[in-house]
Image 1 (cartoon, rainbow, N blue to C red):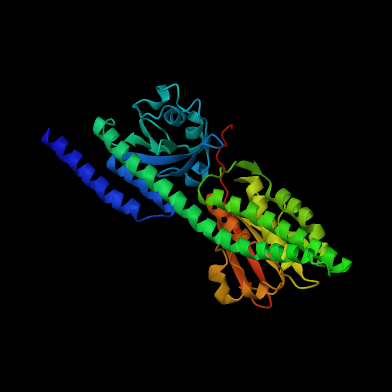
Image 2: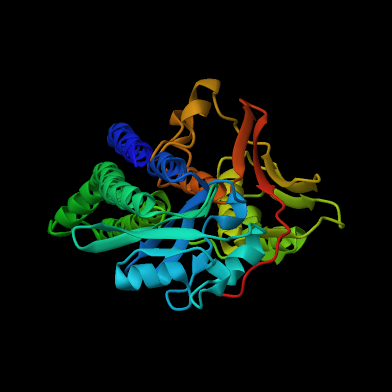
Length: 401
């Protein structure tokens, strides 16, 4: 009895240390990793996971997990009906089971996808301000069964985690909104000036038409900025689900080439593909990877020199597929490279050549991170720039959605 009481007190002392750790972290991904690691540790479980709930889309999906296949798990959607996690969200109650496969709510597709066998499971809802933000689960108690003490510890951690997750989301949103409002000033100032000039009786018909044209362009710019802002906000908050399928990389590359060919012809840029025909299939969110490639090709054409070229190439190893967009443009100064993926960052030397939101590369990097991939850049001023996407091949079965 004394030993059990000592273990319980040790657990609560550990929770105090965890609370301090969570309070000092505002990066959402880092925060979630800390939470699942702590959950598995305090309950002596083999693995832990966090599923986030998007109340607007009514979707529940894995965001982070320990001791499981992270690239496969991240973004994996779990049904609200027909899963233990979905039941926890709907009922806002804890579930503890020693025979997960015997529970009719058990969603076996997750196990089939990851190859991680589940015996016992303990899950608690993450609730803050009467709102469910997700589910915290631990799997497979290392010794014996999950106890009341484990459940109580996980409930306390879950309460701390829910507040920390919401705070991290709010911090990201406020930070992003502040930057967004700053970026709005330039197009809004242009629109204000243009509309003022339209009211002047002395402007000519030619000036009038030019002002209308400028207003149209600034409106398009605002629309693009708003769309990009929403994309980035969803990615940074962890509310984007990646719908993975297996597809041909070459087919996607040629599809992207066809989309950008008109823009390349207009800029007198040669656009070509150089990749082997026997590339393996890639398992990823095809639309999101297409978005990244199109963004890189758009930049490669926009910042190229007249009669320059852009080459899209791909190659595969046993573990990854790499896709490269190489241009013969003006290049990027070395001091700008560390800032290239920052929100709203624009290379000073490029600003006068072509406009943009300054969000495309940041969004692209977030998408790659969501696939457990990387986005690298190599550049030399006056020679050109290469962006390289590296994606884990991923060959496991995709669950039915």
